[in-house]
Image 1 (cartoon, rainbow, N blue to C red):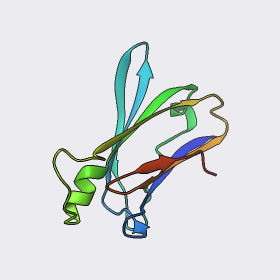
Image 2: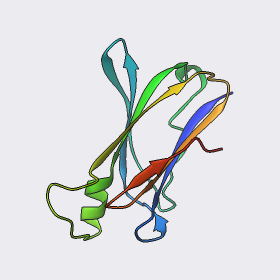
Image 3: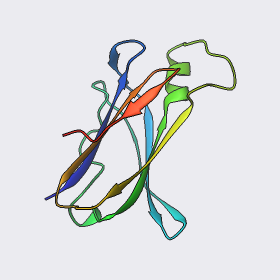
Image 4: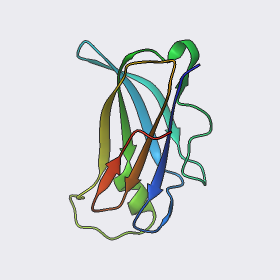
Length: 117
């Protein structure tokens, strides 16, 4: 049974990004459908899969990470507008029988992702 998971690492401070808000959407024929709103735990992870079972289908999805608010909450002083604010990542799920892990490595100045395991 496949599933979708994520975690966030704060590369500026060398720690998990605890308390970072994330929204998950499915993109359907030009429509954006909100599926979940979650917040990372102390390990920078979400408690349980974002999607699994019958809810996890082949489709295009979007993860929106509220990185700017996270860093502001940590007292990081950055000029406005923020260089990295809301990180939006669109990605496709071709085979929902597999595990798709989408991590985010983020700082106030950069971010990256990859398909993890």
